[in-house]
Amino acid sequence: MSSDVEGRTATLSDVARRAGVSIATASKALNGREDVAAATRRRVEAAATELAFVPNPMARGLLAGRTGTVGLLTSDLEGRFMLPILMGAEDAFGAGQVNVFLCDARGDAIREQHHLKALLSRRVDGIIVVGRQTDPRPSLGQELPVPVVYAYAPSDDPRDLSLTPDNEAGGRMAIEHLLACGRTRIAHISGDPAYAAAQDRLAGAQAALADAGLELVGDPMFSEWSEHWGRDAAALLLDRHPEIDGIFCGSDQLARGVLDTARDLGRRVPDDLAVVGYDNWEVLSTGSRPELTSVDANLQQLGRLAAQRVFDAIDGVDTGSGVSHVPVRLVIRGSTIARR
Image 1 (spheres, one colour):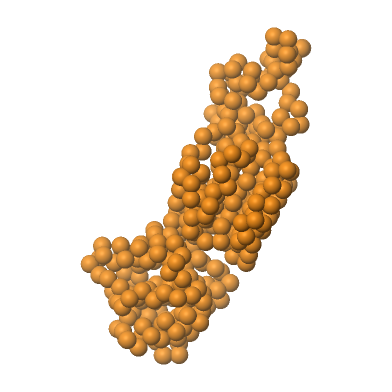
Image 2 (cartoon, helix red, strand yellow):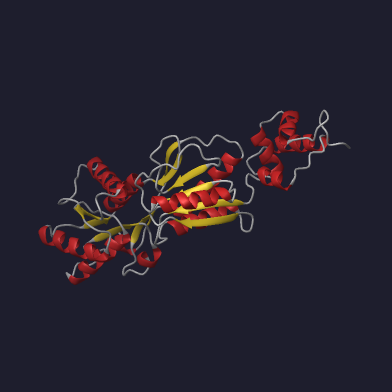
């Protein structure tokens, strides 16, 4: 059977037209993607057979929603947030099916441009940009030849697609849990107030308290994201406000410092004082005594979603634009067991 369609080789567009579907749907059907109805898949496969459609290696890659390489451009020196996002992205890409080029710009704009050019020269199919914090970052621009998804740190251009954790919901979640544990005299310790994450978590916490007819005990304590500050801030708060029975911390490092001070002052956790951290950094949260209740930003899920959006864009699907907030979750451990 000839593969010509009116004197030329059949294309994916021809298959889509014959099956009465979009090119993106034809691509998904021929690649075996699960989000295509069985009847539609059979219709597309039949059209491909009728037209003797045989993709070349490059076209096979396009059918799969990828040609085999994706760039991951990060500024996260420590890897604390980038690594779980990368793991989630690799889960979505499929082991051995996509090569990921990882580039660390080290927070330097010139180095980032160098890495961007290198990725494009390798003809990557898409790029995921991972920031070190949730503050908006400069867009890479609208003229790039491949789809770009921003993860963790959103782009400052609303025309871009960005995925970032819902920190405000996380702050609300932490306070609602403390309230459910019977705590009503709650304080807040956080890190650098210039961070959007710090302000968003505070906003969520204050909103949850206001809904309960309460407010924070004392002013929010801001400084650095460290155990040292957690210890010092807790000492100040508990000296000024000994009635405090719950502390919501903006990070697990801060919460670990709070636990140290509580122990030094003879305050039993969770009996006298309940403590909630943020990030669910397991090396800290499960290594604490007691183990630390913490808000998990679902970073691996964030990475999987970012990879899926890249796939969709390659397939020709409109992935939308603007900032999407990825749900977070609370992991309850021994630092907040409700009092009997």
